[in-house]
Image (tube, rainbow, N blue to C red; front, side, top):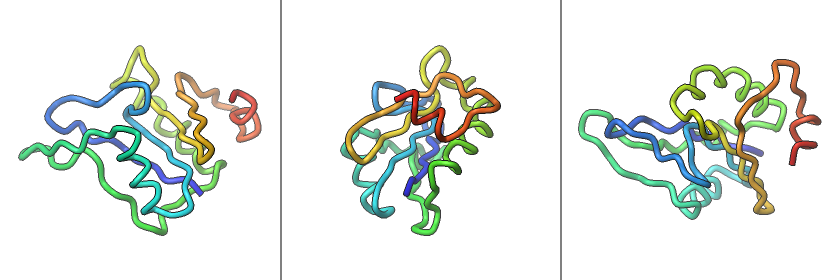
Length: 118
């Protein structure tokens, strides 16, 4: 199962590096392991008094399958991409340690095509 972490523009900036960007998807057995993975990947948990937390923990029933992740990527592409250009605006972190930075998703993309790009 997958969990989506959408970064808040806390303090007026996004953490964008080799592991973090505007949208981070983490494959994990449960929400607590996904949250731990986010922390272990180097997420900045800074807090801004006017903007709030940078990251929010998803609810345990907010898990997604890979097809839903792909739909999320297509949906958020136009919104999230503007904040991260020219870098990746989304990244997928797999349980086995692989990561897939997302620069562009085709409108007719399928989960199978996404997996082939690994």
